[in-house]
Image 1 (cartoon, rainbow, N blue to C red):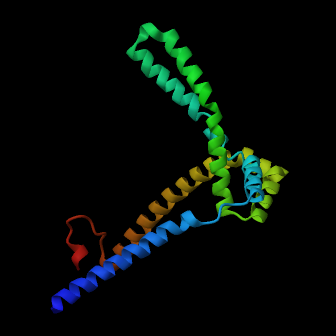
Image 2 (image 1 turned 180 degrees about the horizontal axis):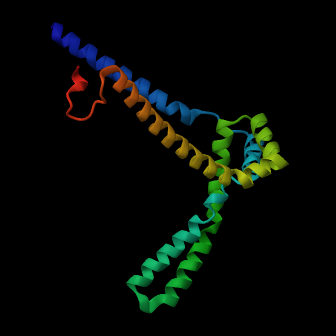
Length: 182
């Protein structure tokens, strides 16, 4: 009897946890959609950032890859394949707007209207335009500087540690020397 009550309690707990998880997962779906004003501010910020420009090459690249693949399979149909893939790709160009809508919804979900307006204002200004144009170069140079710095830190940490260990134990521990267990 006691085991039956325990099993029933476990089942009840399991159902309660499942229900709570379902409600938790469903809550975002019930979230309120952003207003037209919010989406408009998001689109303006995206335009100022050129945030989706990096995706412009997706369809042309996919079309080129498909043409290459199909032509390798049927080289005698190169003209038909080229025309067909190009026409089909052009017919899909309008789907680019789907990405713009999705991007605007993502920005609207994550930034307030005021933040979006500030982002747009900054990136439309001289400093924002300079950041957009020089940002990739600056980032590349920063990554190179961080790599040089990291290599120096690693080298200096190793050297200083070896010196400190020599001063403390009279030698530098090496693999199999047995000093690591002392």
